[in-house]
Image 1 (tube, helix red, strand yellow):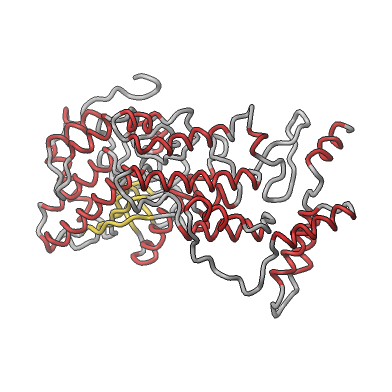
Image 2: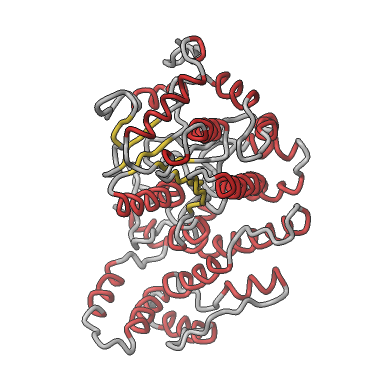
Amino acid sequence: MADGLPYERSVFEHRTIQDINDEIRDVYRRYPQPWVIGYSGGKDSTTVLQLVWKALEEMPSEERQKPVFVIASDTKVETPVIVDYIDQTLRRINETAAATGMPFRAEKVMPTLNNSFWVNLIGRGYPAPTSRFRWCTERLKIEPANRFIAEKVGQYGEVIMVLGVRKTESSTRMQLMRTNQIGDHFLRRHSMLPGAYVYAPIADFSTDDVWTYLLQVASPWGSNNRDLAALYRNASAGECPLVIDDSTPSCGNSRFGCWVCTVATRDTSMEAMIDSGEEWLEPLLEFREWLAVTIDPARKREFRDIKGRDGRVVFKKDGTPAVRTYKLDTSRQMLEKVLHIQQQVRRNGPDPQATIIEDEELHEIRRLWRTERQDWEDSVPRIFRDVNGYNLDWPVDDNGHFDNEEKKLLAGICKENEVPFDLVARMLEEERRANGMARRAGIQKAIERVLAEEWRSEEDILFAQTAL
């Protein structure tokens, strides 16, 4: 045993592929619930999906009527090379299943607009993820997968999740797989999702077992498993599994993770891909490295405000205020960088229509900046036009928004009367939102919430704190 993990003995020392296929068929027949296979595009999830396909393929068609849903999580900030690989695989799975009468249905699950990475990072000013504040995992991975599972539980009553988890991946994973078992050793209750059970057919596989199987057994949907091996050779890390709870560790250095991930110190997988010939990915790596600077303890005060989205200032044990959300100027800089990256990827990469940030995300960022961050200059359309040389079809708000000229006028009045501009701007925005509503009962509470926030300047707050 090394690092608390068991020695990776081969499962094939005491089981054959036929034994494993028999087990899969037995579980499929024994339980009436439909299956949901989590597919990440990596070696473990590919092995599980291929094993299940091969096992069910040997059953009479009348016995394989129970649906098998294959879901892949697309955070919308996955490495483009991996997105293309997964998209091709899902398309082949669906085409082959339809042609051969197999019960597989493959699709992607994605975060809602409100939970998207760019809407939260650029729009709301959330700091880039760290090991202490991994806000992205819940929004980008757990919620989309759980939403799909909850829909199927609502439709069928219960489901069985078939996952590519292995006991030798980590001591934490090994312990989790020993808990919540029911009846026999095949299924365990999901710790967080009611109506969901987990089945892990490769729990006892070693890493060598996984590669031995993939390189000796051809993909039933026509992919080339040697292409998958090449992806791993071009990087030096593992895969990012389908995440359905917060026990799964960060993908960090993962080969199949998000290109914007700042949880790890370095993105060795992206570096390796560039070294292997994918130079068009360099702008993504450069942005990721710049993003990491914005959470560097030595420099984060340059980019971030001491006031959070809740309007509060939080003081650390040493009496200094903690830095919280990004300043609006930093968010503007981010948006400009991301739009330039999109241009470069389209120009130098394999897909001239590649999307780094979607139009609907730009619209939502614009709305958040105008309504919550006092961006009366309406910066998003200007930044987009400056980078791309044309305009999007921006929606017109019939209720009206304040503009830059009105901001200058209000700023002058506020300065004369020594009143914080942002405070008055927020109160005006709350009044604008309530304008024309049949019931205005909520306006007073909204104004009270605004007044309860911290509106002093950072200099005044620091001066008051040192005077204590």
